[in-house]
Image (spheres, rainbow over the protein chains, first blue to last red):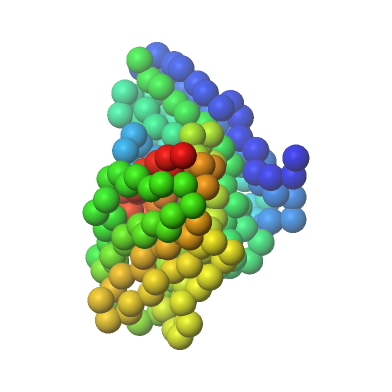
Length: 113
Length: 117
């Protein structure tokens, strides 16, 4: 399978714990995005990488959130001191060109108890 | 601020019939892009169709077509000959300008489509 893969697919954690999600984009794609989707809503933009550079961060990305893309390949999204409001689906997407089609992964669903 | 509105929380259609999913958008920019995505229960967002604001022809991709009415700021998705596998959530999205040449998308709340045999 050469699509966008995300791991883990599901994560249940207790409030206050740290969690990390990983995204492996399509190998030749240099653009990578993170979106968050809460129940009953469409996805919301979180952050964007071009190669290893993080070029934009949404105001939704509080100080407890950090995203990295070392070497411009896979990316990680870490949430520190999780809160119940962080419960959502975290979607990763990649694209080859600037405004080319986004290819999404199946998401990582986070439940904070 | 840019906004996408999908007024139909749920739609039903009989297999093999056509269905229209509504989408209106609000932007003051002249250059923008509109997208439709399908999200099955697996969670993956699947790209369906794209319309640029300067495209004069309505976009078509197989059984999907986009009814683009620029003056009314609407970009409705038409699915012809519905299939059972079309049952899913459908999201309309707009590329937020100025985006520096990348796809920072604003999504609507979605429409859940159920196709009945």
